[in-house]
Amino acid sequence: MIAIGGVSLPAERDLLLLSGAVVGDSLPPRWQKRVVRGSRTPLSTIRNDGGERFLSISGQGQAAWFALDLRNQSLSREGVATLAYRMTVVPKGSDLAIAERSDAALRFYVAFEGTRRFLSNPRLLFYSLGTLSNGPRVLRSGTLCDIRLARTSSTAWQQLVFTPAADAARECGWTDGRIVGVGVMQDTDQTGSPAAADLRALIWTD
Image (tube, rainbow, N blue to C red; front, side, top):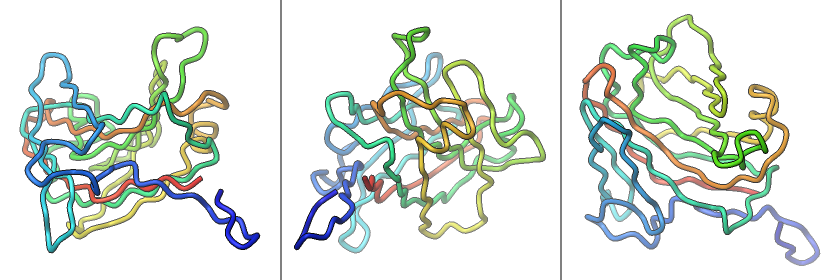
C-alpha cells in the first residue's frame, strides 16, 4: 500500500515490464524462456501497435514456459493479478478436459514456494484459457493445480482478474508459501495445431 495525504492506496506493479522492452526483442527484460522437454519453443516477439507494446507468442506443435523469477522480490499473498490479453488463434481440436488434446494458446501461472515435502519444486497454480468440454474444471496433481477457463469467441483485447492465493486455498488446498514467480505458457504439442496469443499487461495490485 502507498499512503498519499493520509489515505492508503493499493500499490500496482506491471510485471510484464514492457516499458523497458525493445520492439523486435523476443522477451521483456528479466523474463526467461524454457522449452518443454522433447518439444520446440514457440516464437515470442515484442511488437508495437499504435504506440503500445505487447508480447506476441505463436507456435504450432510446440510448447514452452515464459517466466519471471520473483524469489528476490516480495509479492503480497493478498495481491490481485490483472492480465490483459487476446487469443487470436486457438488450437483446433484442443480440449482442456482431455489429456491427449489439452493444448492452450495461453496459460497464466503463479509459482508458490514449495512445501517441505516438495522443497526443491515450486507449486504451480495454472489458469488455462481455451476450449473446455464438460470435464473437470480443476485438475490437481502433486505440485500442479490447473484451473480451466473456457475461452470466449472474441479475438479482441480482454482482461482477467485473479486472486491467486485465495484461488490456491479454495481450489488446491494450498494455504501457505511465498509467491516466487509468475509466467505464461503456450503448448500445441498434443494437437499440432497453430496457436497465437498476445499480452500487453500483467498488473499486480497489493
